[in-house]
Image 1: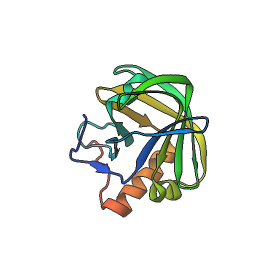
Image 2: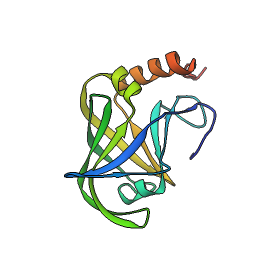
Image 3: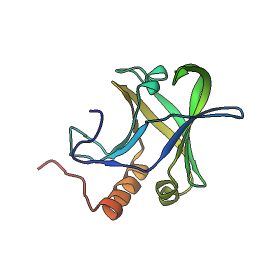
Length: 151
């Protein structure tokens, strides 16, 4: 599901494509923390919503990527360099940078893998259990919501 929905909490974040010293802002990208048990979410995850992410992971496809959290930034290291049409301009990208100081500082230093699944209009990021636990704690503190579990 793309866009706002129950259990999807928007983040104040900026998202960039990087390659070398080139840094390109993905205007109109929306970032959500999607809590387990709401709007079809079977596990808590992060949604990156903008059609440009489908150049990297098309709907119905997936890949595992390295990711890091450092100094207020979440960094996804792509598996190769991609040619992307961004706002009418052709760019190259080998990294996605998510600037969300509040969340990144809460998560702390991380070096891990992330499951990136393609969906219509973006991708979702599936994390290992320790990161999911921290995301759910963050949502609880910031948005006062808890995951729903099956009865």
